[in-house]
Length: 354
Ligand SMILES: [Mg+2]
Image (cartoon, rainbow, N blue to C red; front, side):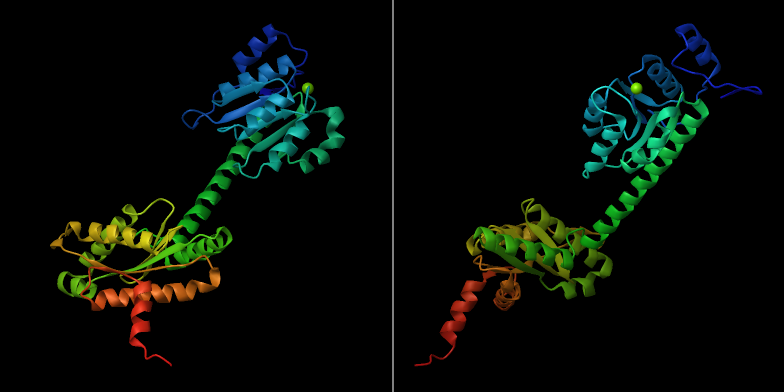
């Protein structure tokens, strides 16, 4: 650190409390542009003076400090919910060494990244490679230099910020890939993936899966009469009513155009039929409000269910639901039909081979 032109390097393990007070009056100064609330930093250091100095410096810079005196406490703090994302870990500490804390932190994959700075005495310098291999991001020699410490913490903050932005971008990309832009329900691809997973699970657990194909009635007429803007609002509202009428573990997907696929895990045909009926009523219940006025919307539904025989039946299941939907349309729309009845009718209609 510099006072005017004189560069001082303090051995913090030797200074007394009085010197500490003088030191802190001169340095450090609060840095500007600091975010509200401060970033939380863990300080794990068993030597009292060194720990207090670190604490005072960090607080003066606007960081929120959590100070502990041994490796076990450091690890407990870093594994907790809402753990600090920045940590300064002394290498030699009671109970667990800083380098072991690094290893443990890096072994937990379910947590956001933590930036780890190891504090090392000069004699431990040859072990630095070991420290970096254990997962430390940086190191700081003891006794520490305040300027150096601040610079390293700022690097750490920058890296954490970049990391968070990358994760947010990845999450957004994933969201966009799995959610239909207009309606916010699952995309066709995401709904198909969901169905593939559910059929595999159903086969394993010997449970049924209910599948409903829904199609808004006379949607082309709505578009032609009220315009595409109103058509979009109708689609959004219909999707919202579908989503609101289902359970959290069901899946509503937009299959394309005005067609939707709704998947009901652990539901047989009867159960899926009742769910579809509930959705049908929710859609017809009140007109959809648009700038062109209220538009009455109805939908037709085809219901089918797997018997838990396995994922190979996906295409067959969708075809069965589709045929039932076709029958609902033919019978006058705004109704629910089930695949088992299509099958029964086909059997009756087809000539018997004697
Ligand atoms: Mg120590």
